[in-house]
Structures are given as C-alpha cells and as structure tokens.
Length: 193
Ligand SMILES: CC(C)(COP(=O)(O)OP(=O)(O)OC[C@H]1O[C@@H](n2cnc3c(N)ncnc32)[C@H](O)[C@@H]1OP(=O)(O)O)[C@@H](O)C(=O)NCCC(=O)NCCS
Image (cartoon, rainbow, N blue to C red):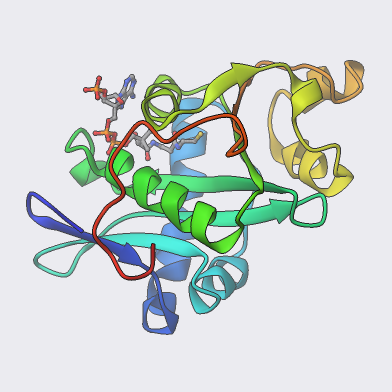
C-alpha cells in the first residue's frame, strides 16, 4: 500500500534489523507523553515480524516510518493491534491511519471470528479506530486474559487499574466484533489481506 512517499506493508524477517530502533522510539514517545506502555523487547518485536503479525512503513528513501503488531488473548478469541508508533519526523501524514487499516484487515484475515479490541488514551487512535468500525465499550467486553492486563503494569496509571480490579481505568476501550460490526473502510489491495 502506497501513501504519499511511503510504503506500508506486512513486515517480514528482513525487517528485524529495525526492531531495536522501533522499541527505542516506542519508549521515547511514551516518556514524552508522560504515559506508560506495555514495554516490549526488540526480540519480541522481531518475533512479530517473523510471524508476519506486524505492519511496517518506510519512506521512499528507506527510513523506517512506522510500525504496529498483532497480539492474541483469551486463546485467540480476542485480538489486539498494539505498539502503534510513527517515526516523529513523519507524523501527521496519515501514516498511523494507513498502518492501523492494514493491521486491522490482517487481523481479520489471520483470526477469522476473533473480536478485535484496543485500549488507548490517544485521540488519534480513537479517531482511527472509530473510522475503521470499532466502537467504545466498557472493559467488561474485553478479554479477561490476565496476561493482557499484566501488560499494563509498566503504565503510570496501573495502580488505578488495579484498584478497579481490571474493570476500569483511564484508557478508552474500543471493540470490533466481526459478528456484529462491519468495516467502514475499503480493504487495501494487498495479497496478505
Ligand atoms: C499517535 C500517532 C501514532 C499518530 O500518528 P500519525 O501518523 O501522525 O497519525 P495520522 O496522520 O494517521 O492521523 C490520524 C488522525 O489522528 C489525528 N492526530 C494525529 N496525531 C494526533 C495527536 N497527537 N492528537 C490529536 N489528534 C491527532 C490526525 O489529525 C488524524 O485525524 P483526521 O483524520 O481527522 O485528520 C503518533 O503520533 C505516535 O507514534 N505517537 C506516539 C505513540 C503513540 O501514542 N501510540 C499510540 C498508543 S495507543
């Protein structure tokens, strides 16, 4: 998928050289926003690339431009598109939207029937999710997989989540249930999707 001067595609083994840089930028951006994130190692990000469970974007000059990956929870019944990051020098070009659109359709293809969900405090992500067809839901509609909620432990707001027994926090939860919801955007023309 081409967006202006960028190519957005499913990541592969060849992209693993960018994993450390992507992780470093995820950590830097979280620090700058004053929020926490579910911290991931470069090895974890690289494994997502090898398994073709990630989407990566490049500028036409070869610079890494953006990334997101897929995680499954509750024995594959729930899928989260996580770790969205756009290189700061390339923000506000529509890249996050393109990356999330591709990750969304890749998730639908790889995990037919699974419920797609995300939690975020970010307006950009809320907007994009809404445009894809997600809707806001209470946390009761999300996975109760403890491993997912443990991922929040590195967030500054984790004590709030814990005090609410994983039933509420500052993030807005959004869900796309393929049994109910229909995609609101065109599927990109890509053989992986
Ligand atoms: C959030 C982030 C991914 C957005 O990337 P981007 O490529 O600049 O976003 P896009 O250009 O695709 O913008 C999508 C929409 O969000 C809006 N948007 C982008 N950044 C925004 C911001 N910081 N605040 C509010 N709205 C924003 C855009 O205006 C656009 O809306 P529109 O369609 O109505 O014009 C990027 O700023 C980033 O990597 N931030 C750090 C990591 C992060 O916050 N990840 C999300 C974790 S949930």
